[in-house]
Image 1 (cartoon, rainbow, N blue to C red):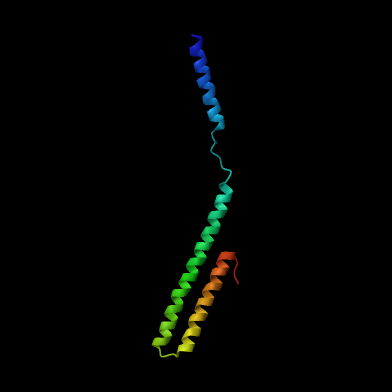
Image 2 (image 1 turned 180 degrees about the vertical axis):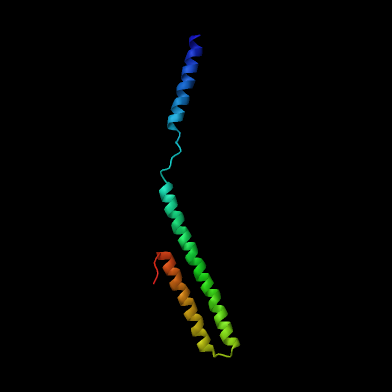
Length: 98
């Protein structure tokens, strides 16, 4: 009878120690995770803006070439379009506007 009690006490004490040692679910990183998600969303938006600028620049250059513009002017138009997209991307990433 004593051995059974010792076994039960030992089992209960080991279970209690296991519960104390096991990590408890918490919300310690929630604020950090939210900030990280916000930064990631900002980067994703900025990346999308830059990519859209690249596509728009290609379209502008092709339209210029189709209209009979010379190579240098078409290139400058494409460059200006991409530059505007980079500025927009930077503004989105930094959270400000010009």
